[in-house]
Image (cartoon, rainbow, N blue to C red; front, top):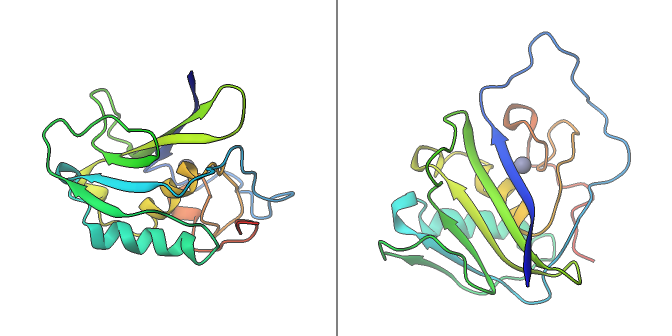
Length: 170
Ligand SMILES: [Zn+2]
């Protein structure tokens, strides 16, 4: 039995000009769940995400101690459902707002915090946008948002960055 535990929407165009922005987050980033195997990354070709781009994003996490299986592209027109043991990169379903860059759904076992599969939905226009895939793979690895400026898991793309504080795999 599976349960969908995380639904994430990466907001785009929400740059808060007049509102106070949290610069220092309290505590550390929180990893809600994790893999016990090395997930493969399957890319649906209609996302326009190249295996080069996905491998780049994977390398960000490998440097932090995470391990992955293979990264490959799937040209099938029915490329939409994540299989066990993989992180699927696919097109969003209809109804995906235009203000979203990407979203990630992770599936865990009901009786544990073990991730068994994950699905990243991304629009082709964001396939090459910097940090978007890195951020979503972070969710696919179980990481929650962390509102520290320049941090990879910052919920707002404009305030995020490559900062990886607290994300190391122990
Ligand atoms: Zn996010």
